[in-house]
Amino acid sequence: ESLSEFARRRIGEEALEKLLDPMVAGIFAGDPDRLSLKAAFPAIYYLEKQYGGLIKGLIAKMKEAKKSGKKSSGPAGPGGVLTSFKGGVKDLIDSLSEFLRDSVETGVEILCLNRVEKGWKIKYKKGDEVYEETFEAVVLSTPAYVTAEFLKDLDSELSKLLSEIEYSPISVVALGFEKKGLGHDLDGFGFLIPRSEKRKILGALWDSSVFPNRAPRGKALIRVMIGGARQPELALLPDEELVNIALKELKRIMKIRHYPEKIKVFKHEKGIPHYTVGHAERVERIFKLIGKYPGLYLCNNAYTGVGVNDCTKAAEEVAGRILGG
Ligand SMILES: Cc1cc2nc3c(=O)[nH]c(=O)nc-3n(C[C@H](O)[C@H](O)[C@H](O)COP(=O)(O)OP(=O)(O)OC[C@H]3O[C@@H](n4cnc5c(N)ncnc54)[C@H](O)[C@@H]3O)c2cc1C
View (spheres, rainbow, N blue to C red):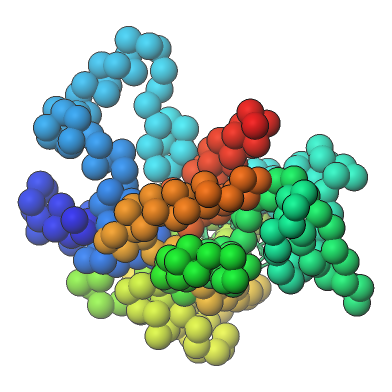
């Protein structure tokens, strides 16, 4: 069942249009008509299955949380609070490499993977040099379309299923403004736009309001999202056009007329995996097939959750399985 079908059945057309559609644009850059409820929002899927209704399920969950003294969490993070790192997401990578020290090798391009007697032989490139090394266990944490290439000769069905996982393109236009005279107090987290509004942006995040250290004192950082499954044709326009779209829409929606002091465009051609209807079943089959190959594991946001929280959880599970033998 698609998210739209579920929403029409349960909460109505208006809630779909005004609440779910923009939320889905914010999390998946996705299209609710094609997103799978079960794969994209498993908590909601199982809430309905287990308790027979959403409200019933939510009340039961709240009671359970109260009893155990735990805060219930939502898609925004633990306890529903937007969370990040002081220095941005790079802090996560820096901490990991600091912790792992010499056992981590960066700046390496994996070229191919082959099954050998003692495990898995990886051919990789570092600088101009090509190396080969054999490992007992290999976790393929590359995006699904890259992993599909690695596994083409090993298992054509597995490779095909991986290559079928779609991705939505998205661009982010980061704009730095002088706060004074901006004409908007930026009191909030930003906004996400329902597609019925027919805007050329998915929404804008007022980063420096959510995380004050994201901009120097007196400055504001606004990030505008463009494209997604809703308007893929816009996502990869030339930088100049993306900036024009972002500024035009901010002018219309927020009445911001100032030109930004800083502009940076980030393009993601294959940005966020789009968990279309059938994704859960596809992933189930993928995991079953990979299970045939001892020492080979998958871990990436293409499978069981697109966010960093989901990836962390999946990574811990994979690590546990490797250590557990
Ligand atoms: C615009 C945007 C905004 C987002 N915002 C949020 C957010 O606010 N909160 C949130 O939780 N998540 C957010 N996400 C999702 C978040 O980025 C992902 O959850 C996370 O990056 C997935 O991590 P991953 O390790 O599974 O995959 P990736 O981050 O895609 O990592 C895969 C890695 O594989 C590497 N690779 C590819 N090919 C090779 C090769 N041949 N050899 C070696 N390495 C290779 C790539 O370079 C890459 O580093 C956002 C994503 C986008 C695009």
